[in-house]
Amino acid sequence: MFSDDIVVTDTETDVFSDDVVVTDTETGAILCEGKEALRPRYVARFSTPVHAALLSRVACGSTVIDRELITGLGGVKDTTEARDRKADVDGKIVRTSFVWRPRPTKNAN
Image 1 (cartoon, rainbow, N blue to C red):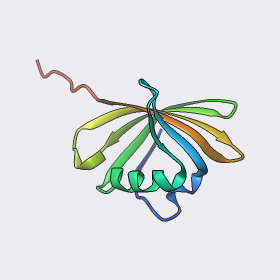
Image 2 (image 1 turned 120 degrees about the vertical axis):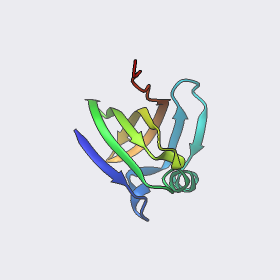
Image 3 (image 1 turned 90 degrees about the horizontal axis):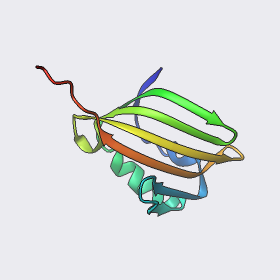
């Protein structure tokens, strides 16, 4: 399992193609198009300390699906479970889609 703190640097978005398309997995809505549109969203999303733990990864050809636990998004202390699907061409992510859900807390009873 991979676990790391996420820090956005000038090169952080270099893994995306110039014409990347980011969508909401459930609705299909386009969240942004192009690396230039993605960067400010990415910086805002990770403006507070964020910790991510990769729980599992499935790769099939140029498509990768990650299951992650993320804490700290937008300054929220709760843990979010996320699915991130990426399609890669020539080493750059051309499409990515996300599903975010608060992780259920265990009932103390």
